[in-house]
Image (tube, rainbow, N blue to C red):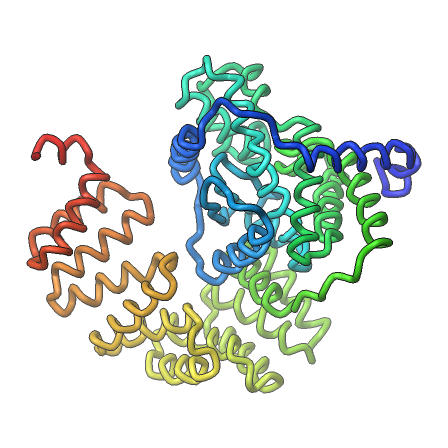
Length: 478
């Protein structure tokens, strides 16, 4: 068992300083000339993404996904222009893991977010994964393995990044039959890759005004889980080796940097706390979270946020009357908290109390007019109350302001269909299924949209979409 003091004693200060010098030099050297092109990297990424979406639950929760994207974009703003666009995703699985595919797709697991206590920890993980993409670590290894078929490489790389042999059965399923384990090992991150990603990641964090101590703290949490037994080894440690060396290096880097720099600006913890509460109460293990939050209320009966969190998990397990009671207690102590009010409206909606839901959500919207979830549940409530035109307007506004809010497309299609606006109804349902990567239903809906649409510009748009979904069929028709 390793402890922080033991690590620092075993690795001499001179070695640490040498590591800092070496990796500082690396940061000023271009990352080699790669034979694999950006287009090849993007093609590989598309194949990997198809496998990831097939085996994992990629959440489209706007509150969580928009927050993760906001952190990612803040870090990216400090980088030079990149050859591709980065995308940030959240996987609904209760393991400690995060990974990046070639061409800039970054994934963080809900289990890892749930283990965090502050935004800097999430920023540290995201910065590290951005650095893997920036250094093109996977694409380098793919270039060295070009004799293996591209689709096979995609399967192997996806399985490794998701945690081959770890807690994730899906990761094993992706890789099984792709190639021998020895070949797969050639695609895994090396200790050198991890250290270089840390060097660049720390630089990115500093440039974007994040405190690097967050990365150190989450690595310690990941490492500490291994102390509970070999069956508890987090997937992250299988996909990101050399955690002890990384902790020692980052600790020394922080110590050296803090002596020569101004203090980092503080991060407002409220947004992180809201997102963390949501991840825990919507995606954490129901019984574990219920027991934890029930005990928290008993320990801190005067804490309104304890009642709020407890109310959310009660709503998830179907105890809506009790949930309303807990949220009302929270509101007596935080009467003007729009997010508690919004969630109370959500619980009323789930319980079929649509008039109460509408009034409560409208009150919340007056304080947070651009909150996407508030608009979404107002739209759904108006659908249930029969106000279909108003509901459609809400959903249309959502899709324009928050194009990644996938459920809005489904209910927009449904509300338009009930108003017999069939061309647009099928079109938005097609967009919904396309975003869910359900290409069969997307094709069906877009073909129906084509039948009911008279607008030439919209018809051309739909035909283009169908052509991309079914290129052979489109070519035969032409």
